[in-house]
Length: 354
Image (cartoon, helix red, strand yellow):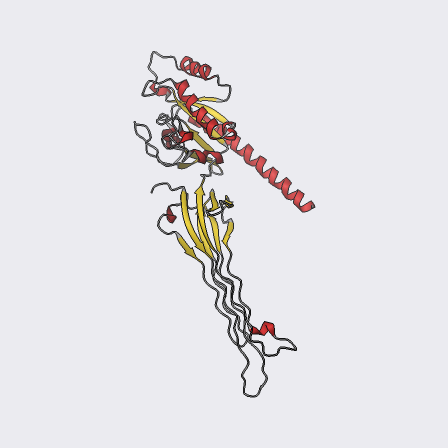
């Protein structure tokens, strides 16, 4: 199934039921008075976070969603049945935008998180609500509020702990295959990966992180070249970026220049993104000729790009150096998760004190 990260849908809530105009007509109660009941509220429409899906493919063909209308009121003070709410399940990382106003209605980032996108119509009032000492036989009722219709633009940003950066054919797909159970397509030509792939790297039974294989970026991506920024936005959700560089490019290009291409595109797309934690991963060491010293070759690349951050030298195909890299990633991710939890607890304490 192709990865779908954008969709446009139409949602409509349920209309509120009308109030009832009715009077008691029992045989021995000549002045029974009004007994028209209220209508039922219309159903609302909610988007709900679902961890069992990671694309918006379900919305490619089904684009119209409508909640149930409220039923009108009846005599004998009977209230109409309320309309059932409609729950639309979407993947985590979905941003909801109102198309007409471009207002961001919310983001789905947690399992079973609910965001109301269309409010059900309020019920109409029956004539029993309008009786008084001076108006004992009111003939006034109100109609239910109309349904709310919204055109929504859904945009999915992949939720992952680690994002892979690199030019096409740098070995990102091979890396994710070697460290997780994900099976992205691997071939000896560029742009093999056309859609993001997610893989779960499990260090131990209760220790794991999610890694995202983002399609290769080329020079000019921020301006729309190649796949453009269509998938560059997905790495903005990650905690760590692995910049994978092919030390033996198939086109005999300079690895340092390949690094700078990606770095420049990051800065063009977002200054914040360019400042993310980023580790350099020198890949395909197994392809170096026997007469080339691997350490000297890698050090030359590091010196050329003036890199001062963490460096890992691996062969994703042979799984050399990947285990230590994954352990170090796990430690960083756990520290970041603990920091987020601590900040959340502090904010909750402040709210309680208020």
